[in-house]
Image 1 (cartoon, rainbow, N blue to C red):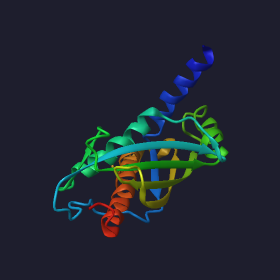
Image 2 (image 1 turned 90 degrees about the vertical axis):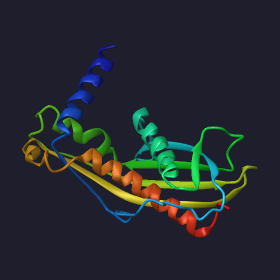
Image 3 (image 1 turned 135 degrees about the horizontal axis):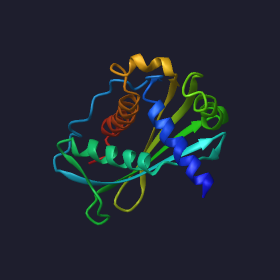
Image 4 (image 1 turned 90 degrees about the horizontal axis):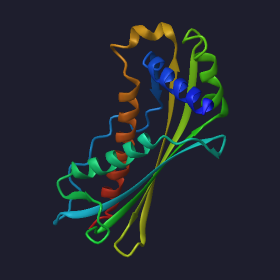
Length: 199
């Protein structure tokens, strides 16, 4: 019970303190536009199965359900922004299925050590978190046959420190992460369009 209480306090403190941070990405897919049309003659339905997992030194780490939902919602939202494809939850209504898997790999220091330098000093000592994100999108037809698989990779880095409070009006680390998620998915959808997996 006490351990759970301490963990909750740590996460709340971390959330408050990480407002004062800078977020960077390697940016291979930065600025990729949303697919507005897949070039189909009829409007089709796609069922999106999205999964998000954290690995720490190759082992499963704690996964935040909020982030899992973010990947699911963004995947469906991007499809609904196109003129000729829409997301559905119905297995029978769907013409195709997108199995989306996002894996965020972190080192032990980033996941478990860095924060314990940062929190006790109330942000005077900086924290560092580096991760590698791999996105895989498998396109399946109505019978479940895999038509193709798209893969995207980018790195993400966050640095937090109390004196970075001056960047708060100019840099939103959450917006940076949201943009990375959206652009990785947009890039994968763009390749699905180019390869003509949807007909």
